[in-house]
Length: 109
Image 1 (cartoon, one colour):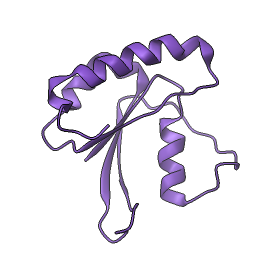
Image 2: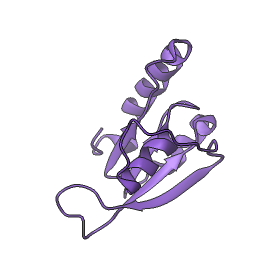
Image 3: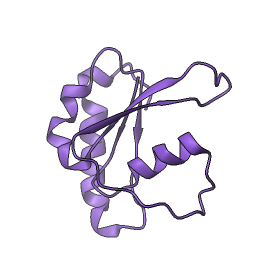
């Protein structure tokens, strides 16, 4: 399982939807902010036959993210919106907390 996290409004849902659909990054897509978590299956990489389960956690849930750092998490995708300079400091703090969490020491970041 992969966990997708990042600050609110960073584009986590958009990233997952585009990976699922194969849309070009230049196309506009509307989304609704994630409240709680979403689970999806993605067929990515060289072996598109076996799906990868992806759990997206809403940015407003950052205090609860560690609850989802379980043994079955094999990787983490951390998403930030580099164009939102007001959120850069918050994103950096959340990333450091994520990288220091003991449950994720074996996960690929």
